[in-house]
Length: 378
Ligand SMILES: Nc1ncnc2c1ncn2[C@@H]1O[C@H](COP(=O)(O)OP(=O)(O)OP(=O)(O)O)[C@@H](O)[C@H]1O
Ligand SMILES: [Mg+2]
Image (cartoon, rainbow, N blue to C red):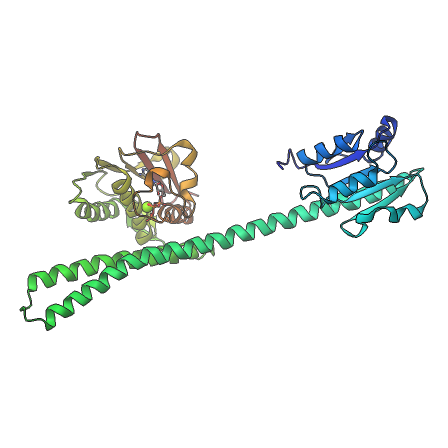
């Protein structure tokens, strides 16, 4: 049931072409698409193909009468809910000849047709249909939101469970060492504590991300602006990630002027750069990562770019990855929730800045953070 446009479909069924023409002329209107059928069979096949707000059925037709057609419609899931208006030449007693009378919206028009009555009945059903569509849309949106929350909960549970479990195991092990005959080995103890710290840090980071997401959603992502040096920030973050990346052997280079004064929330901007560098480390396939800081004077902007030579991002994914939980197929092997870029872009926008990506599959990715320079009217 793919809607062709926003038009509402109305079906007219009558064995006489001149009746169809007359009726169509009566109810034709912008925003309505009128279909006509000369027989019950033809009508049914149209109904299987399109969604109709209303079917107007001539009662007296050879082969299959309007009532017979209506009964078939009521017996088929796909067509059951379509409201029916019968057009009959007979008296009002005919109303009860349709046995499916109770099962759904049914109405009657009598020949000779009163144009006003026809138009107003059709309008009522078309309006009902529109309202039902809106309701369904709202319901679908709600369902998406609910299922997103459920996914979120199970993801979080999963992401927290493993590190928590490992911290717990470490604690048990330590208890054994304390109570066992073996003297405590300070070196081994230190290693354990360090592992604990790493695990706990990653859990705290995860919870921070969740908090940021809900802050961003409610417009409460607080920015505390103050002058700071963007180059110094980039340096701090690059050094920290370099430390982390040592094991992986990934090289980070930074090209920047001596200083670059900007205004913003230093902590938040460092968070953005950290996200970009973490991604470059995760998805950069071990290749060197180039970070650059500078200005585009003509645009009164400062920028930070992070360029990797990893898996890259397909054009179809390049917008989507900035949404919550959106990850690419290539990233499936790597741990991550898909929140980093969402938060980073929210932070950039809260600074009247932008976060953009340039990439092609297999050719690495470049993320560009742009911030207005102080004094430029944003
Ligand atoms: N440098 C990159 N190269 C290739 N793909 C990337 C890169 N950065 C991000 N992506 C893709 O965008 C997705 C979303 O990134 P994002 O940082 O939002 O989430 P994540 O890294 O998966 O998890 P986390 O919430 O821990 O950051 C990633 O899962 C990955 O598919
Ligand atoms: Mg990330």
